Image 1 (cartoon, rainbow, N blue to C red):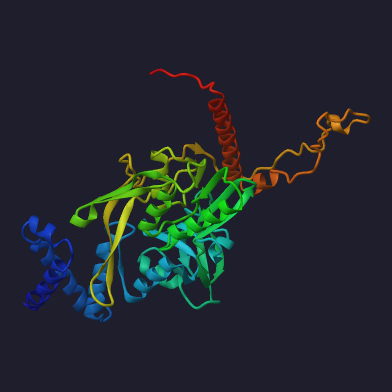
Image 2 (image 1 turned 135 degrees about the vertical axis):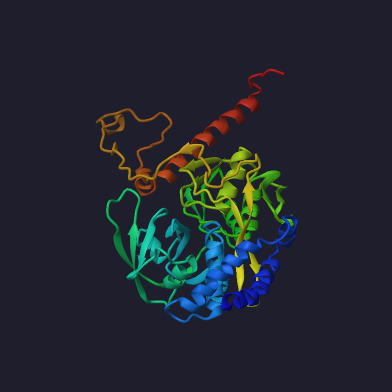
Length: 438
């Protein structure tokens, strides 16, 4: 009888919670609520409430129930407490305290999606795909994602030991990280060589579109832009709107991405403005397994429109959209509400973006040919009739090759595309273009 009374008191609470969700219309379309399952839930709840070895407050039990329900959906749907919600806002604004890791839940463990540039995690060499087995002495197995994130957060200067499992390694290893203020510089730019620019996007924040616009403007004001590398490696994503803005900067109009979901406002279509900021300058986009979500939107759009060559390794494969749905003033749910698709209708979910040219990250040592003897080294050699000398020592390209072979290959490809473009232009100017079929 006690269980029945408890059930009668709990059922309205459960029904009210269900009806409070934005998917009310979808629930009503299916008919009545699953009362038998709700009765089972109430019975289990009561068994825990009266029989568990420790007395736990009802509010805490209900919170556990909500967390478990969301964890069962997918790795990205989570229940946000006040602290977690504030932390999410800090990340999108670009500054927070912690270790500098973008993480997700997989098979009960915390998997690293990407270390953030300049963070303690990146400095320690943690990689995309690493699995966190322990935080301090606490096994991660069984923790919620929020609990693990809370443990990784902490006062600046405090240390925590992580036990890491890495694919391909036979044994886990430990690494001690010191928490720091993580300032995510969303966009950085520089010249690789005269005429060949480089823009790195570490994370898609609210202002990333504007930041990339400024970076492009800065480069193009200094000298003509012959080619550009857009580096999205280890970029875990971020704000959807910013990814649309960035892709649109390199497109002359057209669809960037569209989303489909069950809620009426989940179906959206994002278009680029008809104004390529670089006027068709050759573009190479670098991706790897740490490129996720918004990064994949940019790469997928530019690949489908044949606007850029995608180089590197297959991306992470997060093709879903999360929406933060407030439940109260201090609680919210981050819920997967839609899947996104590239302009050609490809779903990236669990598949990722396949690069046009696959280049694995590797340590490459260039063979030093500068010690070889050339004609100019021979005694009494004839001078060049143009009166020019090309024996001036140049900064060897092998420096970039040994430091970042993927970036080196991207630069080499841009040079090739530029040479072909110049030849095509010269051919057209001479009126010698090859006629095609009409």
